Amino acid sequence: MARQLRIQYPGAFYHVTCRGNERRKIFFDDNDRYRFVKLLEESLEIYQVILYAYVLMDNHFHLVLQTVRANLSEFMRRFNICYTGWFNYRHNTCGHLYQGRYKALLVDADNYLLELSRYVHLNPVRVGKLRTRDYHKRWQYVKGYQWSSLAGYINAKRAVEFVEYDVMLAMVGGRRAYQRFLYDGVKEGLEDIFEEVQYQTILGDNDFVALVKGEYLEKGSLREQPTYRGMVAKVIEPETVIACCAEVLGIEVDQLKARSGDGVIRGIVADMLYQYSGITQRAIGELLGGIEYTAVNMLRCRLQKKISDPEVNARYVLVERRLQQLCEL
Image (cartoon, rainbow, N blue to C red; front, side, top):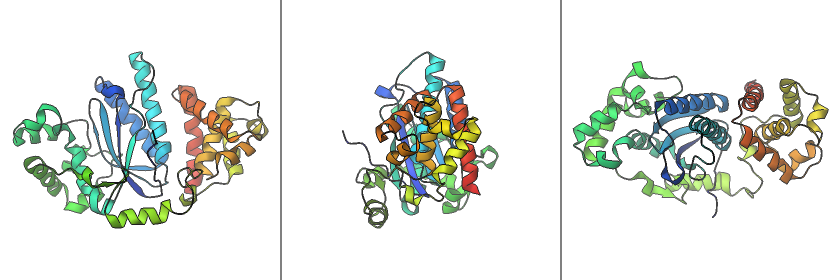
């Protein structure tokens, strides 16, 4: 089966969903949900991702977000791996938590962002028996639903720092107007905005689709353009990335480049080069002792499997934060 195309560029908006494997629960109780939200907040900060709306259901979740640095894949990989590691450890399980890869729609924010936020916030009353209840009861239920970003949209005292409210509120004229906007959606019903999805990837009008195709899909092969590196706001030179990794990890640069070096550390270096230097895995292999690009991919895959280990994750986060500081200079 072909994998969904990931269209990534600085400033892009997305609707992201993830469903439990075989539609099983991904949250057993509120402890799971609290941990999920905490990891989400942490990942948003690390990757400079802006969150506009979210909702947690028993067996899936929805996010509406914007990537400043064209790094959706890196953000979701780290976030999903960390929560899966937590879930498996806490519940003494193993294997895949989610049903395949996450699904991400590129969103035409000018025309669809506001309606998408309403769809996400009303998700708790669009499923199961709640769909057939009186709209007054559905409205009361959705207002009191704890595990979404809605509370901060209708009550400033319940706003949290990791959700960006102002953009959506400005579109309708404030919190009271946004509450009315959602109430109308419960009372009158919502059209299925996903009928507007084009190419199974883009939620946008024809002009937006043409812009995306012209700017990001027709400028060469996608085979070795991980997250469209040429469009990232700031690219760090590979040698600077390597030197930064060596400093943070407390190891000599020559040791990082040696083919016989520590696999976890070399995996971190390979991943940081991939994220921050805009170079292909083949070029990374040349920097790491002349290894093949398949070996680079293997280093990164092994790192993904070990990233839930607290010690490995701590090293990874330290390096990433240092590189993030360099991006901000």
